[in-house]
Image (cartoon, rainbow, N blue to C red):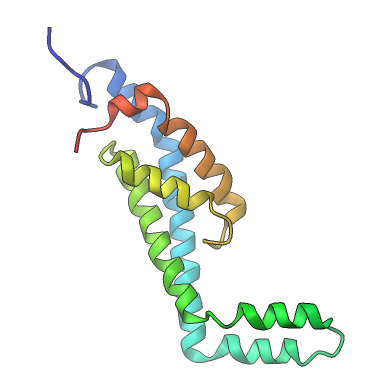
Length: 151
């Protein structure tokens, strides 16, 4: 009897695991791609100074309460640094989704799913949270864990 544990190509277990991870992995890549695109757009806007000019106009409005004014001013302090962090985390999410789809790196797939669940990391947390939860649920199934190639 041959040992097919951890071999996604052997038997029905591997193809079943591949079918189970396919849709959440693709959605993880989409969420990560949207995050990367939005972060790149933010970097371009910060380099052009567009964000700062728009925020100055908003903060000049006398109808904004002082608490909201200080919160908005604090949001702009990160600037390009925050966009670069989002760019990196979005890239990890895309790469982790790709590895998840190919059943190659269980740890990276888990990391990408966890990143997608964290609110305010990416630009689409309304989509990222349910996709990340779905990915985590699928990744924690024993037949899916067994389908990943050993590293």
